[in-house]
Image 1 (cartoon, rainbow, N blue to C red):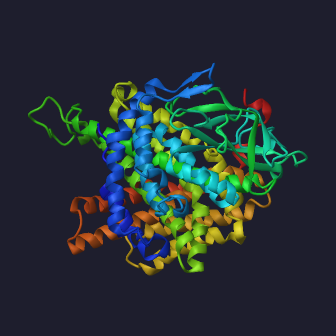
Image 2: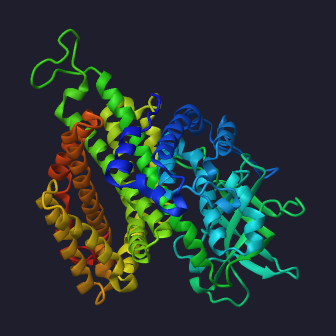
Image 3: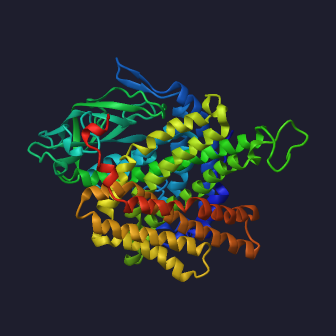
Length: 591
């Protein structure tokens, strides 16, 4: 089926719930009027459905092809033309800085576009997606010369970018990297080493690829404190000379087959230092944090497409009769959407998708406030929330994005298991999102091991102030008592970690994943209460899309009755401690 952008839900969230329609009151976002935001939603939806989606299945079936003689990569049929239209339409420049040819629009709008692109072709969306992170890293940490050399063409989409971290012997533990950077007489560096799993490391969509590479300088500490970041172009911008940064082959993957995932060999390639020596991790985390939010949107995008496919199938597939009597008496059977168990699956997809979209756009809005609001205290609080919620958005949206795609496959039954239907591709494509840009277990450890204690606990205090402040200011908030109980559980779990983790880090490790999920469900509960309040206000006023607003009230009830109660056993999981997790001795595993 053709993708339908969730335009009504997006407008409801942005304008009626989150207040994104007021961003144009801030000087930096004066152009981001409600009319412009609506136009972006509509045009991005059309692009996704008409240009990007038609390349999705062919991308999966053809994949990318590597030529060992030329060490070049060819992308699937239609990718070059779709990418060209995406870049020429200005979508690569949406929230990029004005001074280098960007449009300077709110980051929240990029979140919106990311979801649509990932719904319709995740593989294709990864090429400009990684470029955006390279733009941010160079803009914030690069010298004026590097910014002038690279940013305009990266922002226009004429060039693409990569992030080169992982090596064969190390993934998350980047202190173990072996890639070396030796100073040249002209101020550049000779980069030597091998990187693996490099998205967009080599392809035929553009004329030049700009690699951001982690490497170690001579004499640098053999830890993460000895890592530097370098920009290494495929072709040298001043001379057009081919730089010896070559693709050594493609990874063979279960999904995202249209995305060129490369082994990259740097054979003395010339690179230039980004930022200060031995400060590469700080610069790279600028890129990684953006990538983590983008990956969260990948999970949401796939979940939305899976929901649309499974809903369409459930409305048409005839099987058995309704338990309450025939609903299609003239036909041989009723459509499966009449069956409670099918509705349970569809409701879980729909309600979680809308809740995840709300959490993602809430985070995007806070990101915009953190860089553009005139009040320093507002900027600081917003930045606290973005830092805290980044691992939550990445993990929860990719966990549930995959789960919802898998649920969609279940709705289709045997049809879902065949390649005749798109669900099996969505499941395969979605699985990687829980792994790359830091596995979800790493995200959970980042949350409990770093973010909770950052700035003396200011980040999590900002979240609790947001949640409890809402209840204080809204004594008639929908589902107030259920939300209040969930917030209390999150507070209890946070205090448990504060008490136990400093004495025993393994307690934090055992509690990390359930704690992140507890936080996600609680934040989404807060947002579902806000959505229900906005929907009821619209119904009382007699304005807006009545079926949409009525569906919000029912969906909120489903969330608080069927999904939020999970926070109860998540707290019990946390408080039970590490005992049964860590108790096995070596011989117990194979007993």
